[in-house]
Picture 1: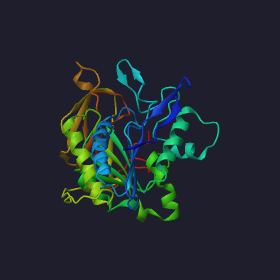
Picture 2: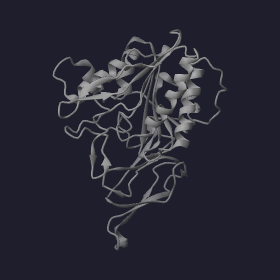
Picture 3: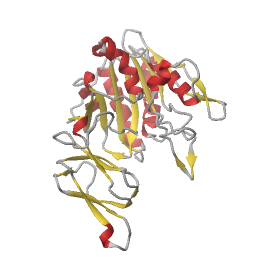
Picture 4: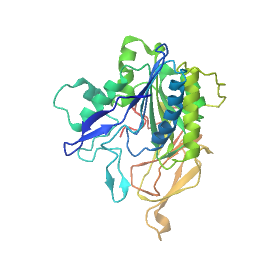
Length: 338
């Protein structure tokens, strides 16, 4: 039976709310694994994936096939999950402070007193994950292909994970600087040169609307297959053969909306768009043809993500593409600094 390792934090009213967490214990000879979803509370797909995976882990534990331990936090953010405004969840930022829920974990983990409720939650989540040898953080994008976000220290070992998850693209990063959860967990491994004994990645499970049984079953099966191959579960499974395009983060090309208006895509996710080829347009004033702006690709590449809503504000990212050279807009840091 899984051990309940849930913990409480304070909501905006100072009342306790629970972060549900469960630990499956094996023979203690395998890796310690931490899996979580929903740090950005409006990114739902991973919650269902882990819900399904927990049933497989329960069976593996009961049958004595679990070699390591697996801690699962299927809905990590009780502060953001209740932030509904006019029928829509706003789970990326803390409503009261504007704090991005997946930024500043490093500061929260280092502080002892004077924590806000967000920082208190961040600190306890880091403490729960810190003993792990493997950490996988499940997120989703607006609309996207499934892709892996992984530090260079874990590549090319991360290819097996991306293949098991049938992810089309792996984005390789070196420097973050904003204290994301992944960055905070791996920081001591990097300082101490222990990355060879560890593994960490952020898994982007398509888009925010891609929550269904078919995708969740596929992703839960992919995680289970990878855990078996990594030596966490004693079960022989065939390796997954899946083409994964490795992409330097600086080569990812983000196209920004030059004006607000109605967004019309002319290309689909996964399409390869040639440099200079049009892929979308923005109509600022319906009824005025002169207000329409055509958007073209900065370089040849595959469309990996795109903006979910079809009315876009000026300055928002319209789409992200793979590329073969450093983007002229690249200035370092995270793929999505906000």
